[in-house]
Length: 320
Image (cartoon, rainbow, N blue to C red; front, side, top):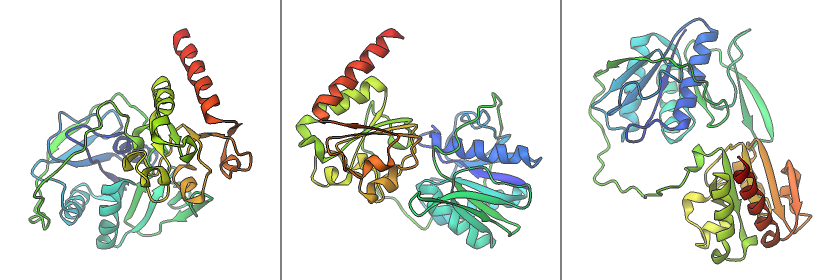
């Protein structure tokens, strides 16, 4: 049961989510007595760090751009056939969501999207995932010979091995791309920590009363080395950019620490953040729904509480 993992990258750099998928596949391969091969596209320097995440081999399709999901589907299937892989792993990111279902359909494979733990292979192949917006856990048995799994970012972590992977050029016949990209515009967020990559997140909502008050939120994030986020109403009214919106209709995150300031905690917002390891809520309304999901809660005015948190963070940083 060889393991194949699709590893996407951005300008040659593999994001944390891709490395987590490789590490997940490598640990599964180790537990089942086989090897892990990663397949990627474009230009990569060396093994791109995939060997350190556990891959023993990296197949690089240098002539594929990654703009056409059907072409990528054919690439992954070709790689699976080459490696004799019965299990194919993706990150549960945009690329994984586009490609994994297509691969599963073409191979007649069972699929579990959004896995949060390594499969239990003691008596079959049972994959755990969150369901009902994180309110319950499901254990799903895949009984088909071919299996496809996508891994929820920040759910399993990266287990560094210190190893390196062999790199092999891979150029199967996958046809021409059916999608033509005429222009690419990349919005720059220099110095910002991407939300899906962040271990610490400071988020705020309408309780901040206006965009002019966001300075203390950003200062707290800087002191903690955290990313900033916001609730949907805040991005909808233009206080903050849409790429900071977390929730059911925005970005789903699973940081180690999520600090919510002035956010009531509507179910749509909770659906995007309730996978966080630790949730801290600051709200002056003691009846705010968010307190029911919080590990720690502070009932108080954000404009009084947050400056105190900033000072505490500064003192801690100065003592290191």
